[in-house]
Image 1 (cartoon, one colour):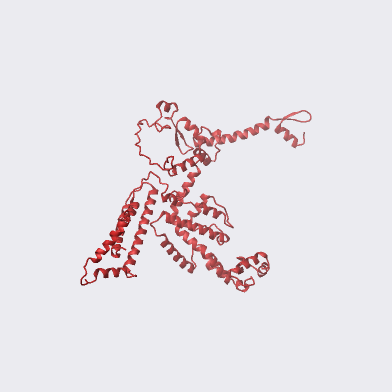
Image 2: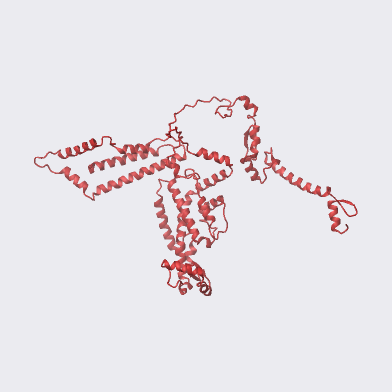
Length: 513
C-alpha cells in the first residue's frame, strides 16, 4: 500500500499537469469545425478528471477513516530505545522491491500514457473510423452545424386538432419565430392541452438538451436548466408563464362538469348523467379505479365539478408539465436561432441536388477505410510524395489527374465561356457542358423559380427576359391555333351546303339549319 502522503503529492502533480494540458489544447488553432468540437470535448474530459481528483484530495484531507493521521503518527513517533530511525523506511523499500520483482513488466507510471493519449496530435486530413466525434453526431447534423429535427417534425404533424400540416422548411420557420411570438402560437387550445402535444414537447426538449450538451461540452447546461426550472416555478406561482396565463388565471372561472375518467368537460348535467352509462366511460372509470384515483362506483362527485373548482385544479396539473417544457425549450432554442438558419440553408441546398450529386456528397463525407491485406490485417499506407503538376495554361484535369492535351482543349472549345442568366449568371466552359446544363438541377431550379416549364422550347435560352417573352409567345400561338381550327374545319348540312365550323354552329343554334 502506497503512502497516503505520497498519493496526495502525486494527485497534486497530476492536477497541475492536467491544467497545463488543458492550456495546450485550448491554445491550438483549428482548420475545421470538427477539430474544434473534438478539442472542446477533450477539454471537457480533462476538466472532469481534474474535478474527480480534486474530490479525492478533499476526502483525503478530511481523513474520515484516519489513514492520514496514522501515517503522520508513524513518521513523527519518538525514537524508541534500541530502534533505528530508518527501520520504517527500509521496511517500505523492501515492499516496493518485492512488488517490482514479482511484476517486472508492470508500467511504472500509467499517468504518462493517459496524458499522452489526450495530448496526441491528430492529422485532420485522415478520418479515423473509431473517432468518437463521428458517432456523436448524425449525418444531418454535420458535427453540430445543423439540427436534425425530422423526428420532431413528424410528431408535430401527427398532433390532434392541428390547424395545418407544415412542410419541414415551414416547421423550421415556426421554431425560429419563438424569439418573437413564443413556441407554436398557431396551435389551438384543444391541440396544446392534449397529451400528444406534451409527448411532442418531451421529445423536442430531450433532443435540444442532448444537442446543446454535444455542441457545447464546456458549458454547464445542467446548471442553466436548474435556473430555468426555478424561474418557471416563480412564474407559474404568479400565473405569468408566457402563453399559459389562461390556464392559471381563468381556471377558477370556468363552468361545466369535468369527468376525470374520460378527461372531458360537459356543459350540462343531463349530458353528463347520460354518458355515465356508456361503455367508454365505464372502461375509463375501471382503469382509473384500478390506479386508485376514483371512487368505487366509477363516477365523480358532480357537485364539486359544477362550480369548476376541481376542474380548474385538474386542468392546471394536467397542463403544468406542458408549460414547463415550453419554458425550458424556449431557453434552449433561442441561442440556437443561428443554427436553425444554417439548417434551413442546408436543407434548401440539398433539395436542389440531384440523386447522383447527393450520393457523391455522401461518398465524400464518409470516412476512408484503411486497406487490408488478404489475411484481414489493415496495412499502413506509405506516404507518397505527389509530384507537382506543371500546368501554366490551367487546363482541366483528365481521368488520370493530369492536364488534358491542349489540342483536345481547343477541340472541345473549353476556352469559350457560356453565361446563363437563369442559373444566376453561372459560367459554363465549353459547348458540351453548356448544352448539358439545360437538363441539370441548377437550370431546372431556375426555371421553376420563374414559373416556367423546363421543356425543349426553352433550349438555348439563357436570358430571363427571352424566356418570359417566349412563354408569352407560346401562349398566343396556342390561342391562334384554336381559332384557326374553328375557321378551317368545314361542315355540311342536309342540303349539301358547306360552311366552316363556326358559321355552321351559329346557324344551327338559330334554327336555320
